Length: 192
Image (cartoon, rainbow, N blue to C red):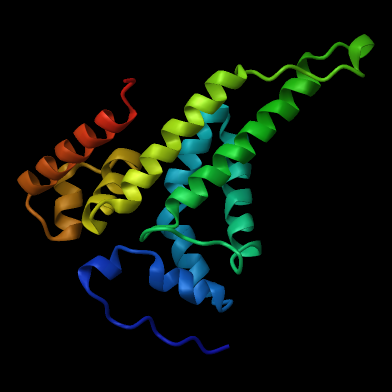
């Protein structure tokens, strides 16, 4: 199938997933590949931080993108990025995997009928979910450039200088934007 080129866009649209997601909903595999390339690293590292296993993190990251493809017609992306949806999906898949691994690894054969306890208490799971949801909402409402800087520098580990060059910004601008964004995130997630 011949794919139409993605039209030129404003800087905000270039750093947004809206156009790609629209094409994904029309079964455009190249748009899926672009979303995968754009977000695979942060989804992997987020999964890795939850699972502490490279192999499990790779599988969860892949499963997150499979879910994106399968559910593309019913997903509603709020804001300009698919990353929050992917991270929530990766988190849920990671928790499921951890529960599955824990139940296999820690339940004695004599107690096989009893459910395995979860690794984290329910209160901690709820608190983590609330914090992640707050950060996702904050990022969705952030300027598209700030979203991209957050992804590049805070998740993927780009140096400020490299991010500045890729986004045609000054090093000082990147530093200031990330400082403000970090401070805003901290104020939102800090306990009251």
